[in-house]
Image (cartoon, rainbow, N blue to C red):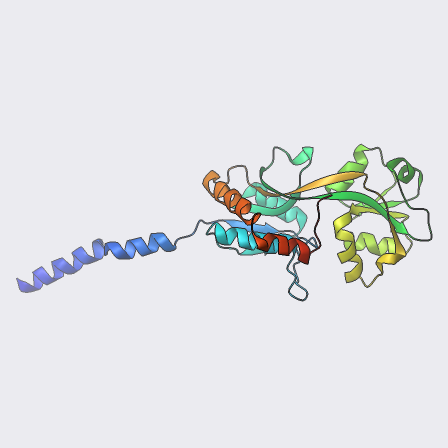
Length: 254
């Protein structure tokens, strides 16, 4: 009889674990979310150089810490990052430009930055000052399937040389295979430096457009987590850390 009583208590213990163990399990649990990143210096740098992970990476690492979320970024190419964000309700993507074609495809969680769009050409040529001037020039290279390409097409550009990324666009300009390169101003110094070029060998034209960059989410991404991120982001904006980060990356709104 005694053996049956002991066995009964053992089965009862297995069926109903101690309450404190359940509490620890709940406390330690984290929302099952994914954060996909696009390599786009100076905001996101997939292969950090001298401790520089990118302005947006360092910013959202702190935002996630304050929001009590695990920061575990996945670096993906643009097309795959967009596809994953549209497919998986757990996904956040850092960062995409806000354009009409994307408006209903995502939740626009947080505006991160705005960057001017400009034409770049070699110093031995006349600087490209306007869209009309660029229309009359030769070939213009631009990142394919990007907001920049859409912008130029909407303005009637037919003389485009789309390429897979801005690094290749710069190489075409450097080699003299195109007449100008259309991109975001804030990306230019990092790209030219990474490719071993000199910034003073190029004309940087005036701003002819602006792109706003956002943290975006799947349309059904959980609203409570978005609210936590937005609250934490606004808190970070008031800290010395934020000002130091902008100085580190020489970031200023355009």
